[in-house]
Image 1 (cartoon, helix red, strand yellow):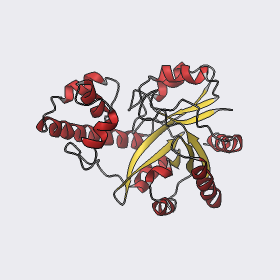
Image 2 (cartoon, rainbow, N blue to C red):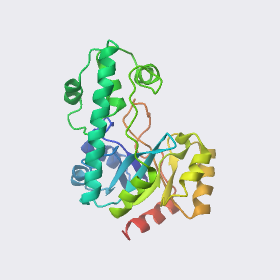
Image 3 (cartoon, rainbow, N blue to C red):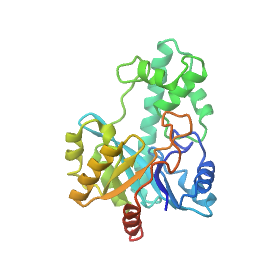
Image 4 (tube, one colour):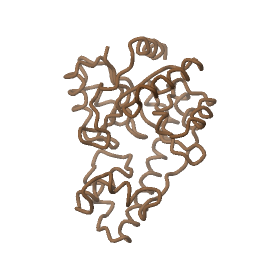
Length: 272
């Protein structure tokens, strides 16, 4: 069975709606997918409503911090109605909004004529606004020819319009996911760019590792598979699909998970 446990929609920084993503997945004959929007769960219910021939796993990609490093934690099959989780998401989304407003203020001071209301109109379904949305607005207004240029020169940590994220510990994120009855998976470990940190992070109560990812080559997959097996952790994976011709130029299901790993993951999901 072809699966993809890492997909983003218009509810965060993806290009396509949940309905369109379901259509792509069904056309590609996938058997199971997970919507993992950034710090957002509002797209899960409509995605499940649209799906008729494919299983939808509840998911989200939560932001965290470890020693000043941006860490992403994938949560799966948690209870979307868990009060503490919803309060946490609401708090973090508010923090995101304040960050983006501050970033837009810096853009204005740097001579870029954009405003927050304009951003909201451009992304009406997105509560988890982030740098990609600011970058797309800047590009739409003609300030650059590519998203990559904006990320490299304007909104990167050393750029003139960068504002750091509110820091939430990895332990807190894992605790929120577990409290809501879900599984916590360390996302795309290669993108942490520090395997010592990866080893340290796995001392926390993660349930799995995203071994398969669009930025992982064969050697990365082998290395992280060994790490997962040595620690008795689940092995997951996905495309990290944001949209065709987006900064992640992949297709849904392009980076699937081996059958034995899928079967084990599904078995655990069904016990939740």
